[in-house]
Amino acid sequence: MVKFENPLGTIEINEEYFSELLGSIVPTCFGVVGMANSNAFQGVRSFFDRKTRYLDQGVSVRREPDGLVIELHIVVTYGLNISTVVRSLVEKVRYTIEDVTGMNVKKVDVFVDSMIS
Image (tube, rainbow, N blue to C red):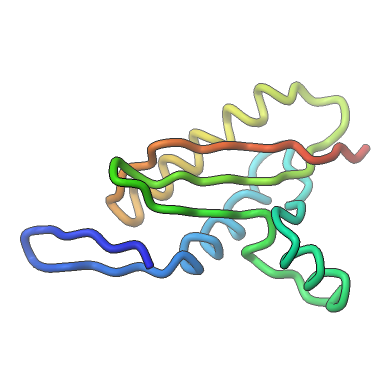
């Protein structure tokens, strides 16, 4: 649960909300083919349930005192400039989260787990 206070009161947002929001945004970025599993739970879940696409796949969000830390595990298109794809992705994620929630994004870590042609 991510909790922060403003002049009107306390706001609580589930980590699942951030994961699903990011899981729906990231695959729409240029050069991103899809998301990769970011932890053992996601790997086991996707092994046993191959038909369902989970929006939280490849996304991890945690709250720190000075902002959110977001980790993304992605699959990119072969032949594209990876640094350009990642830079564009980081800016889109930072803008979207800060615009939708009003919370500060401290850091966005992007891990390119594989490439597909």
